[in-house]
Image (cartoon, rainbow, N blue to C red):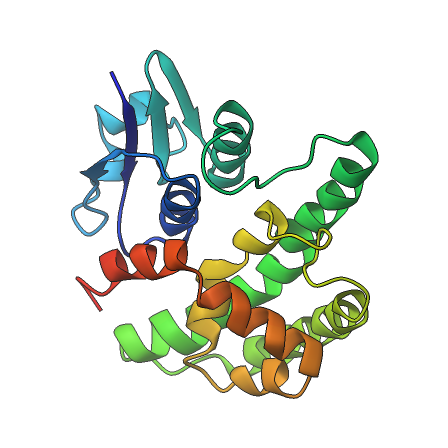
Length: 216
């Protein structure tokens, strides 16, 4: 039955899954879900994700939603394909797990808020950003990147010395932040700057953003 991604090429969460599939060199079918017309809030999509959010994923009779859960499954189920994105050693995996949690619970909260205010809201919808929201989340982002600078001074990537899901999960938000004034926070930190340039240049991500550029 093959692999299917149900999502939108304007969705950062969808692109996270697409990048993972490209990193694992897996063929998949992309099923476009039109967010503008509200298809994600209607049947039949709700049978794939009852919360009405993209992406949803199918691997034969297995159905998943939540992008990070999907990427973890792909990395584990197709471990022998493409780039190893997780570790087999329990201690290495525990460390990787910490930085995956940091991305989801620290970086993404601030980064996504800034992307909404400075990219989607301002550049796409022509609405002025909320200065108070930007200021608050800019401080949070800077604090997270200070921690990253220390971590990346000790290892090439967040989860260790190889590229893993801990790095890949950052790609959509880092990519969009680079088109905003928040880019300075990456540039000001040498290790963070080198890391962000490294992960953004990966062929898997270039393939993912080629899909994005069909719209923007």
